[in-house]
Length: 544
Ligand code: ZN
Ligand code: CU
Image (cartoon, rainbow, N blue to C red; front, side, top):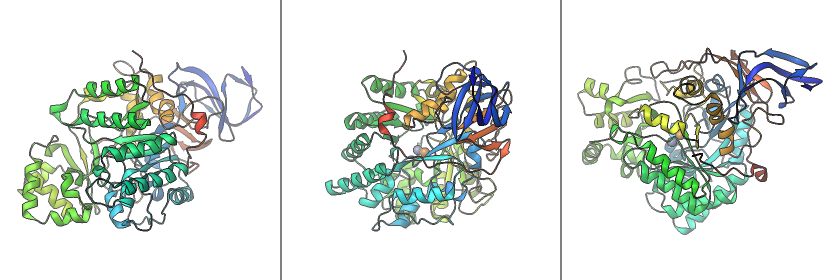
């Protein structure tokens, strides 16, 4: 029993699942000045507000380690799709995609097209050149969630090598490393690469190791969208691990999935590679989202050679019949069928196209799937997104169950009624965390405390966040109260913009952001990766 005199908020008598993975216990949680001040049975506390949490789960706010909200948070800082799930921190700058740095000699328009997947609102002006300036812009937008950023490899390479398909020279590499070091010094949590996104995809291993060494010097994390999640999955995961071990940097395999029916079952082998690297001493982790489809730019279906030079060059090539023939040939035997690929967003909403599969469109137009894709890219200046399936439940469960895996949505902070509300986005932006906790826990799934840890404390540790993700005195008051009997995700592939049921209360830095509905509060902080010493021991251990 603790006697506490005053608090701003007390969540009374809830089932506290504290984010460490330890067993739940019934306790009161007291908050003052944005921090958790007590987790105990409290007597005689005079609180500005007491919320009865009896029968409800009280846990840390969800730390979404993998998002693409770099630009959407500027348009939709209320972050409806995130906070309504209970997300209180988002990590941006993933998959190599990012908006900084943009030094004066960068082709900014080409960079903006290359990271078009982030870009859902043409009204957002890029007025920043450095990470520091971007973070200032983000702070001024007053997001509802806390935000931490990685530096993306795509802008680094665009700024130094441009969009050529070649290895960097030693001088270019040094410049890239310098720009990365600037970003890390300004507070980025690490680096991300996307080995499928030009021009990052043109990097050789010497470049990746050099960048990894800079990450290691700053005790950051190096997150990888690996080269190939389909036929080349194991080689691609092995590359990330090899670079991590050579550079000595904390390594994260982003959204580990197995794409293509012929590859199903490979999750085990990929996880074994990760586990073995961990046992050799690499600080490595994995993240995943609980859906059997992904989402990215449609131009990702185009071969790397066709994308050389950026989006403009790709579109010019697609006008050449010989090039089209070659692409058609290369797409035969693609691991994901045309009936598993849907158009999810266009610059202008066309209900005939958005939500249709490539197979539907091919049948309606009397064309091959490859031609449908190429024509869509031409018609909409390559600014087309897709949702693509080809994954299986067994692999997903295998990845999720692994002790080194945490949860990341790979989604966006969106507002269904704002400029980021167009199209048929992947439902993960609205449903990841409730879906995980409702559908992947209990019998046949994870124990609730372990699942919560993967969404909170364990996730925070991957990013070096020491003050969040745990319900304990001294931690930031980022909290979620949900009703486990009601918790359910309602966002589907056909109706993606539905909020989940059962999330009762969401608190960010001590302020209530969701109380059944969004309260309008936007108390999020831009988180700077600092106090690196405090991060201390977080080497991974694989329980056997
Ligand atoms: Zn990715
Ligand atoms: Cu991503």
